[in-house]
Length: 162
Image (cartoon, rainbow, N blue to C red; front, side):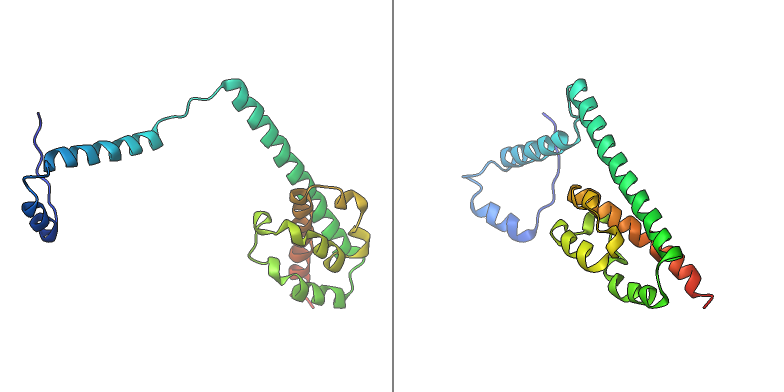
């Protein structure tokens, strides 16, 4: 059997001395170490999964990501178009104030419950389509963030020249 030296706090050593005839410290330490090692090894052991289930999951997630990318790109394009063709100087100055809450957010930070409010109160009327409203919250959020990025980038570049 292998031997190891361990260090324990003085207070614990004093308590152990008082109970030495009732506790096998080597056995207690061995059990605790075994439990700890089992837990670590369980966390680091490669998962064994059914390959067809994994492929199905990956395909579904790729499809979701493609949809999210599509709606983000559509929103960005619409935001740029609105900025270039429709927005007034007052609209764009209001944009900074009204949309500042998104400045340090990501799509995943966006509360899906708040989407309806964002679509109605923040988006220009021409972007309040039923097609957008019929999308799941994740895709609505992707569109809104894309729209925000499209407006923000173009407006920030233009405002330095005013």
